[in-house]
Image (cartoon, rainbow, N blue to C red; front, side, top):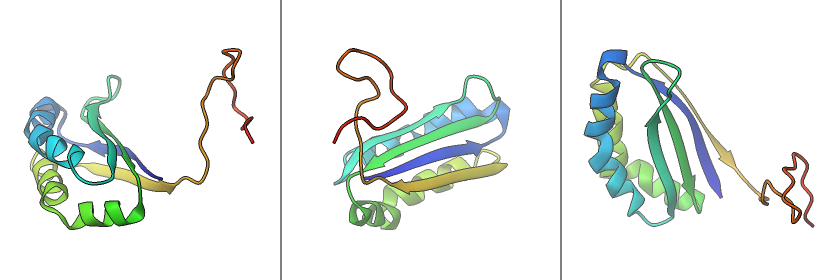
Length: 113
């Protein structure tokens, strides 16, 4: 499993417009093989900040995405709205489990075998 998380800063006056323009690329990406989640959304506390969250099944699926039209179009679209900064990282995950244990208690530790 691959997660991508981070932020992209654009002109605060154009953030809503940037996200609206990016919707077709988000829709196209969500239809790609291996895309579990693909969300670009406004940070409600930092003007101009767009939060990025992606979940891909495999590295190969992500590699295909990076070579495809939806990635290139999204990158170019967002850049056209006064790109100021970007800080986005990828994470390879080898274990996952629920936040809440069977008793409904949130756990920071990994409690399943």
